Structures are given as structure tokens and as C-alpha cells.
Image 1 (cartoon, rainbow, N blue to C red):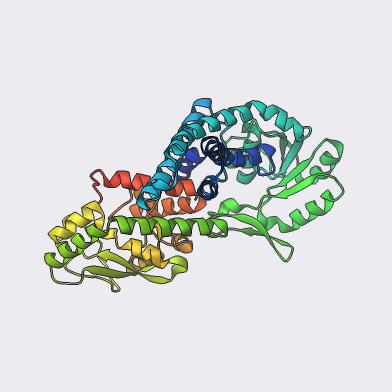
Image 2: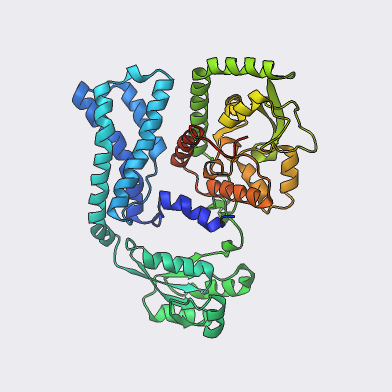
Length: 475
């Protein structure tokens, strides 16, 4: 079974590790690629047509919304910068062309403008990123002199911050060391002899050290149970001019879309939340509606043929409806073409197996090609499902696994999907062992932590590619 950290790294390697949000480079990187997509479209349209037509303004709003914010790239090797830009643009351009063809809007745009825009945009993005990379030292100087930080508490979250500061060449903060009350021998044991930073003293020495040295930032990484000590340290640090940041020991639990906010002026750390709030939720819903409507229109003749085949294959309804958990754990009815001689939806639901005698001959073909899932695009239009998200399980399976897999129900913070991150990573079909279900849930959690519009598009494209080749788990 893959370890959760390996699953997380798989996503992070494709998206990059973002710079600090108060870093000027972070802001520029977030804006530069989306702006180039828009500005290149405007420039080419004006150059060819002599004016900027309304349809290009609408298109620019769509592509900016999908591509913003841009991922960090200046701190990776040059060849990876080029590869990532080309792959990202290929995915985005392919999706736009697919939607245009499906909705028959290709005639609205001048082909010469589109052709020039498709090859000019990635070229301009590559040039812009390398210009930003070359300008990075000067941009950092604009942020002022180097800042120095210390960390109270030598533990996992403290080491994580120190490592980030050390390994990123595009920041102007240096970690001087740690303060901790434990002995060096004990720390070596607890951290597996991996202490790479100096221990400057005990917690009680922090204020004096800050007063006597140039310390701009104090990160407090003490465990939450040490509240009296934290309060005392905060009171004492009021006598300094250092900026103070609290790093709660959030590594004790998994985080889903964690954020820092305020409620009536009180800081609140969000531990679990849906990634689809505000504009992100609107963009995902618009994508779901447009994509599902386009698919249903294109495959309508195929749906009629399948309906006839199901009706002739065995007695029973054409559409199989099964209760499953949807958003916020509420029950929904998920539609599928019936592929079995039975329609289980009770307290016990037996998963389909490779040689399952309940599956009809026509149903086996539908399952092999995933055509039995097509009615779920109607579920998407209804608003109870999404094109991409954690796959919904039968209610009976949910009630079983929620008792034995920690955090299982967190996956219901979003609408379930027709396809998902777990499915394109090999966890499609039967989950006949607890390890397989655990792995599927871990992929679902990582999808929630790392969601982006680009990731959704990647999953859709990879799903299509998987359907075009034989899938051993589809039966």
C-alpha cells in the first residue's frame, strides 16, 4: 500500500512548492502566466482584426480564471520549467478546443488568431519565466535587507520551517537556530540524530537573545499542551520588536484546505474545509455544467443504443439507482445503466467481482468500457455529483468503512465524482481488501488538499486515456 507522503509528493511534484505568500516573487509568479495567456490573445486579436472583439474578452476571462494562480517555477531546473509550461498549456488548450468543438463554437473565432495564439502563448510564458528568474535577485533586494529568524521548539513543524527557509534560494530570511529545553542527547534520539541546526539555548533565553542580536522573526513551534509556557513567552516578547508567528502542532492530524481566518477579530485556524468555496466553487460548478451538457449532447445516440441493449439483455429497469453518500454525507441517488440481474441497495451490498455471475453479458461490456457510468452526467447536472471528485460508495460500504478507516468521512466535504484522483492512479473497480480501500481514501484526501482546476483537467484527460486502453480492474 502506498504511503500517504508518497501520494502527496506525486501531486506536489507536478504543481511545485509555492514561495511564501508575502514574497513579491510569489505574487509575480501567480500573475505572470495567466496574464500572458490573456495579453497574448488580446495582442494577436488586435493585430489580425484591428480591434478586440467581445468573444475574445469572454474567452480571456475564462482562461484567466482557469490558469490563475500560476504555479511556482523559478526554483526548478530550466528543462522542467519548459516541460511544465508546455504540458500545462497543452492540457488547457486541449480542453478549450474540446469544449469549443463539443458546443459548436469553433466558428466564433478566427482560425488564424487561434493558431498564432496556441503556439505564441507558451513561447511568451517561457521567456517571461526566465526573465523573472534572472531578475529574482534584484526583486529580492527590493524587499529590503536579509531578515533573521529563530524558532522556539525543535520538533517536526519547526524543522519544516527551517528547512524551507534554507532550501529556497528565493527568500530573504535566514534561520539562525532553535531554542529548546530538552538536552541535545534527548533531541538526537527523538529526531533520529538528524539535528542540522544549532541549538542556541533554552526557551527562557529567547527574549535576551532577541534583544542582543538582530532577530526579526520568532517562530513559536511549541506543542499546544504547553499553553502556559506559550502565553508567558508571548508576554515577554512584547518587550522586543520581533515579528511573531505561531506554528501549532498541526502535524498531529491531517489537514484539508487549512486556512487562517478571523471570527469577530479572533484568529481561527481551519483544519478541515472544502476547497470549493467562493470563486473556486463557482468555477468548478460552471465546468461541471458545461462539460456534462456537452457530453450528453454528443453521446445521445449512444445512450439510446445502450438503453435498447440493457432492455434486451435481461428483465428489469434500464437505469439502476443506488443510494450513496454525497456532499456533507447526505444520501443521493446515483444513476447507472443496469449491468446485473439484481439491483442491490440494502443494508448489505456485495461488490462486483471478476467472475460475478450476476453480471449480464451486455452488462460486462458496459462495465469494461465504463459506459454504465454515463447516466451519472445527469447526476452532475442535478447538482448532486461532480465530473471529478472522490467516487461515491454504496451506503452499506460507507457505514462499514467509516468505522475502520480514520478520516473516511472527510472525503464527503465535496460532491462525489464520476472519476477521481484515486481512479486514475490504479484504484478503480473492486476494493477487495482493506489496504486497497485505505489507499483509495488516501488519494481522495490528497485530491482535497491539492485541488486545482489544472488537476481536474489532468484527471479528466487521464481518465479518457485509460478508457481507450484495456483496464484490468474494470469488470
